[in-house]
Length: 344
Image 1 (cartoon, rainbow, N blue to C red):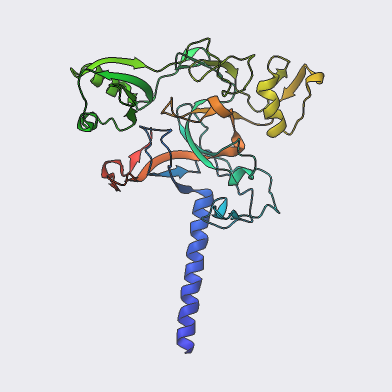
Image 2 (cartoon, helix red, strand yellow; image 1 turned 45 degrees about the horizontal axis):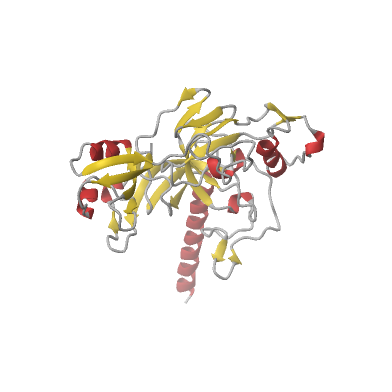
């Protein structure tokens, strides 16, 4: 009996020690995230298991320490059973990293607009960083310009196109061109497809296709669902900016004109309330901010829609697709060709 108890204690000790090291790795070194949406297609697919490097930009220490490991937000989402207690909230602190966030790197971060949870308990998002602190960003005809210089598109960036075939098209034809996102529009001989530049050129050269028209807003078309939700800035997803991204230590004058852009940042992330009556106001920013886009540009909820990402929301750099599972019920299988695929 004594021997059995000793063996059990040894196993228990080994298990707790292993769990402790796993938690340390998860907090300070890397973490694996699953991708639930198509906003980064074709770079990252739904069902990808992505390895996120936390050492690169410096590990962010837990802000909500009273949380249950391996659960996020809820133990049971339907019953709203929380996986954390908000009784203790630690100040933001990040360990030194070995590199800075650069343009075109793919980031995992907590969703800034989700204000009903503490920072580290907000939903996980994965997007591509296109503008860093101090940059000026402008989008014209879907092209991104940083400091007046056109930013090259990611290799697998895709956009919406209206495709008009000459003949009836079977799904096998789309499959042969690796076109997986999109659908036929009612009974019309017309398809709305999400295409990369390579796929667009392949379709253009096909004898089965009559016309391809890119879906695009006009420059004067105001979209009230686009940040900063103010008709003073009549922007839309395809024509946006120019917008100056705040950098830590930089001074920006808050005026009546740019109040709707910067006042929410000051109140939410800088803990500074500025009334319209106190303008103009010179503010020295306490945080760095970033502008992110999804590679599936016409089907992504990103900075165009909800604003900038503060540095304290950054979790890490998306490095590698460890494994990919096609969750389509008719095709449920592992995508072996994506195993250990480097994210670029």
